[in-house]
Length: 321
Image (cartoon, rainbow, N blue to C red; front, top):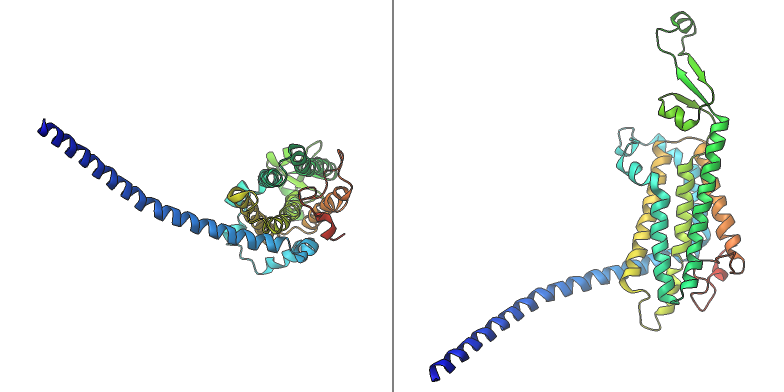
């Protein structure tokens, strides 16, 4: 009887020792993880606070469109110093194929996520959240209408030509010294380029248009994060927590990507005045919405300015007209 009790007590002691060892090992593994998490969270807070202060400043809010206009107007001058052997001089570069063709898709997803998290963390109102999200839908509708109209204008103002083979008209081509072009009527720009023929006509750069429009939209929507942080600071709480800060940081990175992509297009593929016309249309679209329609009294027909109704003070009072 004593042997059995002694063996059982020894068994329990061994189990307790094993559990204590596992607990110590788990503690040793958790402590570095907690330290790393605190370090990353501190870095996230510092970077997002800095970017929110920059984007929320009066200088950026009032003069960013002027900075962007200067980039569009004088960006092609950089082509004199750009190398034709640069990786960005290749139109099939990964950056152009994956981001340029889906500029609005990336912008709408990231910006809508930021607006959703900010609205729900500030007011917990679904109707208010949907009203602020409708701004992105209206910009998307504007981009779709502009894209369709510009495509129709390009098809109406341009013509399609097919270069003649060298042996088709040797005498006339030799006398003129130029390659003859055969006119093809009733061809759209898309079908002409798909057939590997030449398209000549007037056009507006849709790439520059959407890049400028998305840059202006991102600055407008992200600039409210600074007042949001300032409002939450006296309450000693972080609005939306780490998820909102992380999405805000992704939007800032996206803004930097769009500005870099715009500079690459203006530097390596300058087409004057097509790109300048595209930038002007993007500016007019932003001006009509954010500086015009959205400044009206919020209602079912007007979503209002970014941050309006989320804070105690009206954000639109601090913006430039």
